[in-house]
Every structure is written in structure tokens, then in C-alpha cells.
Image (cartoon, rainbow over all chains, first blue to last red; front, top):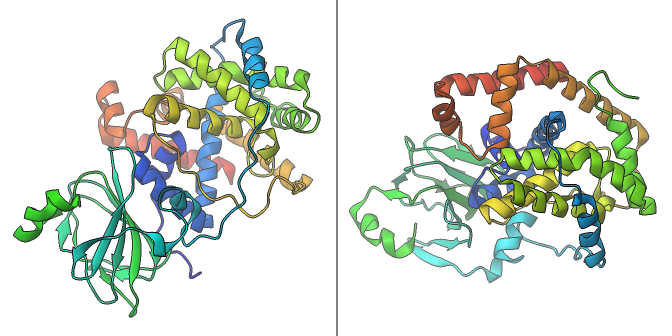
Length: 214
Length: 183
């Protein structure tokens, strides 16, 4: 794999480490960390910070019966299921849990001009979707009401700001207007997560927006 | 070996090893007595009430027992590993959401940890604990709030009456200090 140049931010890694990040964004962070050693080590540092802060706490006690009740729980559930054997997947594992293992089996929904999407089933505080952009094609021109993360899974895209290859993450906010184009003569597949519905600038897209959930 | 602030990283890794290898109830009870109150403290700072926290502590510690074979002392201290289990429990109990986890790295539970890596990780963890203990009280409190409560930076600002920029720069400062101390 080429070197990853665009990483998730410390803020996002920290929110993920503390469990305060919406499920949709957590998928993107977990998938990026699966592909990126740099962010994996940062995440482990944030986990260590959580462990160290938890360790400092000395003022709390648990109920007297807590230990015996825990042993009861342990005895009630002796057979722990063995982890399933890993299947070969087209996607990083945290994403496979949502979309399956094969690109061929994705149920795409056309957005026009060859662009397709598949919305993941997550909690409602963020929307995660796979996007398929044909070679040379562009995403509909849009701006954002809130945070958007775009993780490149296959191919590459470029917009007015930069070039993003496999494993790279683009972080955009409300002030970003951009038009990603699939580069290098190949289709680009991304995971895009938004905290609010995308806001399209062209009237046509605004009209169909409620219908296609983008 | 106990460091000045009483954090005994190697000891808890060894107790977990006893749970994993020998299914030692005694070692598990020592782990429980040390960590169960800390897990409860973390859960209550995250917004659970006492009854829910007690319930979750039992589930977290039962998971520690069942998953002891997955603990890797070259990559996390016992406190860090138990924190991640408690955090996942919190997401499950409070947010009612799934927790997508990063792909595991190639080495599985079968790999024998390199003692040098284990000791290195333990020394770094003790330094981190020391660095946190040495933070000015205000910075430590803020870091704890940001870390444990289900609040965004701006919600912390509203609750403390401090401007958001101050919060962010204090957290950054605290993180910078910690990174510096870890070098």
C-alpha cells in the first residue's frame, strides 16, 4: 500500500477512544486505524491515557456483594464463543461488519452520472455511506452543514484542496465547498460519513435530496 | 516494583496472566478489588447512575475473566485494557450503539510476548501515570471531564463557563506535556 498522507485528527481519535463518537464516524475511524499504523499507535496512546486517568480514581467503592455477583455471572456463561475465522474481505474488518465481505454484493443505489451509494445501517446521529464514483466522474457539487469524513477504500480522488489515495481521510466541515473527482483512470470507492444531510447547491439535487437520503 | 505514585503496572499484568493461564480465582479477586471501584468511577463520571454502574462493573469484570487470553502486555497495561472494556460497555449501556473496532494485528493470542517489550510498555505506562499526577489540578480535571463525560468540547465550555478556545488549548497543552514527558 502507498503511504497514507491524510490522517484522522487527534480530536476524532480522542472522541473514538473515549467512546463519545457517533457510530457512523466510529466506523470510519476504526477502518482508517485498521489501515494506518501511525493512527493505530496514536489511538493506543489515547487508550493508555484513559487507562491512566481511570487508574488515578481512588474515592469510589463497589457494593459488598459485587464480587460474588460477578462470579455468578462468570459461572452462568462458561462457554465463550471462539472468534470466527477471518474471511477474506474487500473491506477493512470494521466496515465488513456492516456491508459484508464482497464488493460485488453491495446493493448500490444510483445517484446519476454513474455515481452510486449504499447507506449503512447505524445510529441516527451520523450517516455513513459507501460511494462509488466512476473513473473521471465527479460527486455532485455540495457543501456541508457539519463534519464530513471521507475515507478512500479503492482508487483515489482529488478536489480543489488535495489528492487522496487509498487509506487517506479527508476531513471537511461546514465551510468546505468541494467537488471530488475520481482520479487515475479508475473508479473510486469511499466511505463517506456526515453528521447532517449533505446540502446540494443545484436545485435539482436539492429537490431529490429527501428521496435519496444524501 | 511500585512507582512513587503507587501504580504497579507489572503486578497487574502478572495477575491477568495468572487468570489467563491458571484460571486463578485468587488473582481475579485481587484484580477485582483494585479495578472494580475504578471502573465504577469511570462509568459514573460518564453519566451512569449508581445502580447502572454496579451492574456494568460486574459485566466488565466478567468480561475481563472471559477475555483474559486476549490481553497483550506488549501493547497495553492492565488498566488500559480494562479501560477499553469499560468504555465499550459504556457505549453499549448509555449510547445503545454498536462499537466498530479496528482490525486485529496479525499476531494472535498464541504469540509469546517479548519480555523486553513488556517491560518497555510497563515503564512507559508508569511514566504516563507520573506525568498525569504532576499536571496542575485544573488541567487534570479538564482532561478527565473531556475524557470521561459524554460531552463535546463546547458542552464542557458551557458547563464550566470557560471559553471553548481555553478548553481546547488546555487539553492540547495537557496532551503536549504528556507527550513531552513520554519522550
